[in-house]
Length: 244
Image 1 (tube, rainbow, N blue to C red):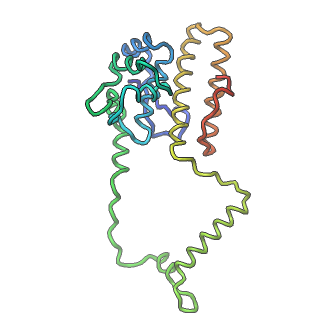
Image 2: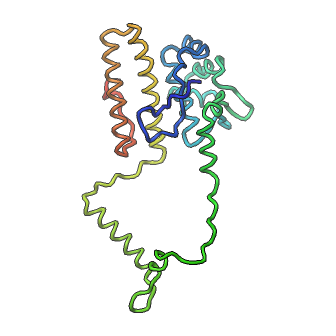
Image 3: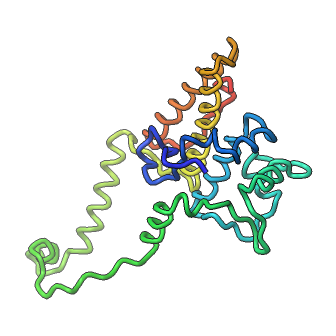
């Protein structure tokens, strides 16, 4: 698999994302896959690997089928699952009795998997401190009436923050929908894969005027996706409006 050059190359939000090696295009397994699937071979692989990272799914997909892999890689079901068959023939995926395994994804992304494991472990409770800190003491100090207002103060603080948010003209960004961040990442990675293929063809002088125009649009679309993500907007970019 192609690793070391991270999928988030230009976007820090994904500094812990999967990594992709720059020599993929010269790897014999990839060359064989491309001879079967054509120029979209890299995009199919990126979608396959991105699905491993999405929701921390990992390299083994229990109960997954050939049709499931086909949909993950192409976005639709195809009779005979040609993409899955090519991936299996070139040993990028393996069929198991309990599902599908993506070849060596966990080994190439061992640091990412280790980070998942660390974050999934419950944090150890710190040793109980006998003496309260000044902040804790002041937070629990009763008012002049002799009543403890700690809970009430916290509730009033929440209301005040809510009011401040409204007074600021609604500039706060709504949290992304579940799965939106991952979907945006997959779109970026897939488009970046297409761009890498086009860049190589451009350097080899294989692109005409129309091809160079598409290459420019892909660069602009990638930049647009990154700007949206930087502002907390993880909605998918309409590539048809970008001419792609």
